[in-house]
Amino acid sequence: MRSLSWSTSHAVFVTEIDDEHKEIFEAISNLQIALSRQTPPGETGQLTQRVIARIGDHFAHEERLMRAARYGSLRWHKQKHDSARARVEQFASRIAQGDTAAGLELVEYLASWFRDHTRLADLMLGAFLRNHQRGLYKMTLQAGTKPIDACAWFDSNGNQFDPATRNSGY
Ligand SMILES: [Fe+2]
Ligand SMILES: [Fe+2]
Image 1 (cartoon, protein in one colour):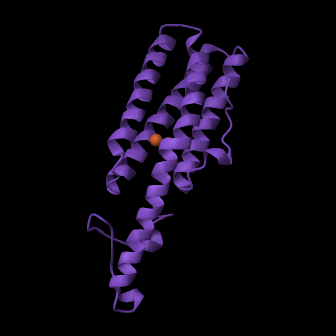
Image 2 (cartoon, rainbow, N blue to C red; image 1 turned 60 degrees about the vertical axis):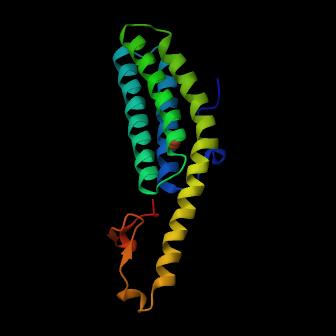
């Protein structure tokens, strides 16, 4: 079994993505503990649904960020998400049919998949988002001839935004 703990070796240095990864690792770990303790099926079922829901929300979130920043490797990255989505669905249907081995197999699969995915695909995405954010601020500052408070801020889609309320950029 691979490690189920998030560590700095999984960091992509975009706070909101790292926070979601930590939650996913924790949810997978909770499921693994419950399965190893012969927890009642209803409870492990809830923990399984929690893992699946968090992963679904997280993939959708990363894909929104990629589209907003016009990330060139969006298709490649989304294909990785889609293949994991398909595998998770297969495990979920085996679990729903009462396959007792499927829960631990799901945990093993996800532990391995997230470890590899965060350290390559998500790390690349994090680097791109940070550079993209720096580029936006630099362009706006270079273009500004008025006092900074009098300048309007626009994102790459031409939508005005308030940088003070934009948490960590992405
Ligand atoms: Fe991802
Ligand atoms: Fe991710």
